[in-house]
Length: 297
Image (cartoon, rainbow, N blue to C red):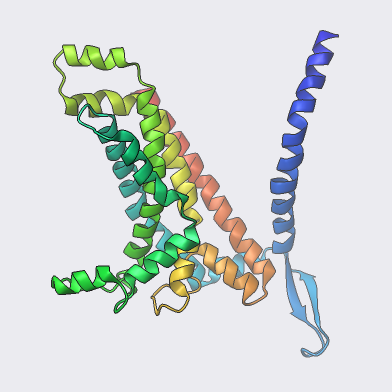
């Protein structure tokens, strides 16, 4: 009787979660898989309307065979290699500084660093487009007056421009996560290290960072997944700025263009699923690598 009552209580508590999970995750993914297996074709030499025709894996081969789609993954690779180390090192360094005995006005700096994350991504991208635009931006004017010329919309400047926007949005957010983890460290451990003669640098790198390793791994995992979903910032840069960012600059933009500009929903679904599969594989690699590294340490 007690076991049946426990099972019933668990079902009542978990039921809403599984219902929402099915509606928000399982059904959309299943519908995307279904869409990816069909393609729209016109009949009657283009005068008879369109009809959905089962095409199997043709949409997947079309996406993988499209140079623009493959180049989008190259852009993502460069973005991840540039953005992720800067984000992790920067957020961790700021958190360690705030947690140090030399820090002053901690609450002020926490709020100041976190505030950019409260700005919606579209608004943040529009702000930075203004700051990147010559003849409008005080930043560009100051750089030019100092003899520094840099085109933020050029092929060489597009990727750093997007990375800068993402860092501005997410650095403070991840800093707060690291700082919260640092605050949870037993102070007696740090006091013992100080008594043993460890300096501030040794305590920060040799003691604090290993003790918050779980938080670092979590942030790294979420950052990898978020990086693969890069969309908003390059989309804004693509709209009317003369930027080198094209409509298929990232896989997400490729899928968006296929769906809403070319009305090819099958190709868009296939591209989205391929991107999701890539994210799942990279997440698996990150968790396995960090887990194995933790066991050997």
